[in-house]
Amino acid sequence: MFAVLITGGKQYKVSKGDRINIEKIDGDIGSNVVLEQILMTGKGEKVQIGTPFLENKKVSAKILSHDKAPKVLIQKHKPRKNSRKRTGHRQQFTTLEITSIS
Image 1 (cartoon, rainbow, N blue to C red):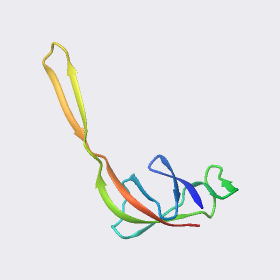
Image 2: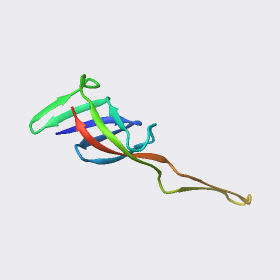
Image 3: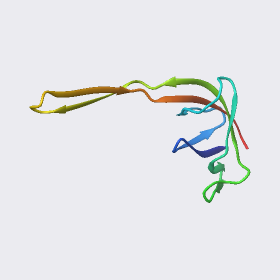
Image 4: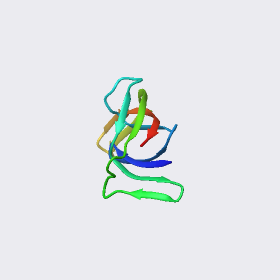
């Protein structure tokens, strides 16, 4: 069985036991979280599609870790002006393990 869910403005196709990295959410490591914005579920030939979300469908997951992605460097340069600027950004994310789809 699989489900397509939306969180943090992105869509993820998940099955039981999958590990996914999503935008950072609040919660302690080891705690359970329930994701309720389910767009689609399917099992074999049987597929249910929501308009936009499915009623009475949930995905339960366990928070494994909170971490930061590798640094992305941003460089700006204006020719002949001796103007240079260099900054960086590290996006925070949460790793989830899908425990059940109901």
